[in-house]
Length: 188
Image (cartoon, rainbow, N blue to C red):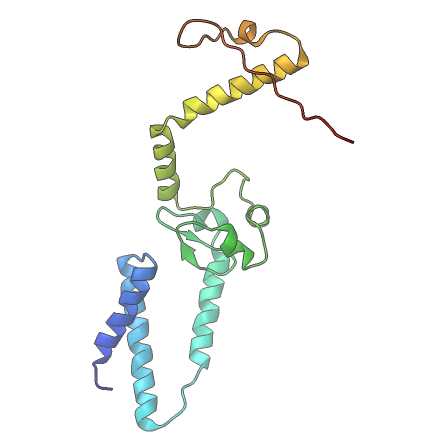
């Protein structure tokens, strides 16, 4: 080989890091694994022998066992989520990724005992989204939407006028009432 094995291993790991965020420990272990694999390849090339694949399959089995031993709550970490189906680390388990395993996010939550409201994303990502939503004023808007919905239901039921039940007033000081829903005509 014309280039040094260290350079090749560093380039391979650098490409891995650019695609998937990794910690410094993960980078160093990945670099060691890639370097030792390249050394084995070079040795087998020089000797003209065939590589033994049993070592690789044993390592793979050990990694799979480690993944299976991970408890579901531990799979959602600060900066990553580990898929309990395949062991892939990512920032969020998407419906598309879970579809590759033949399950939906709902089935995944049920299978591993997650509450249905638990986000399948890294804690840092969930916190950032929450912070952005609060900055845009979504909690207040959600409360307003829920109250408006209650008013519409009360109006549709004909029990009380919505302005009397909530006592809400608009910016001008007059009590507001939501518009009634339009009903579609059935042409038959």
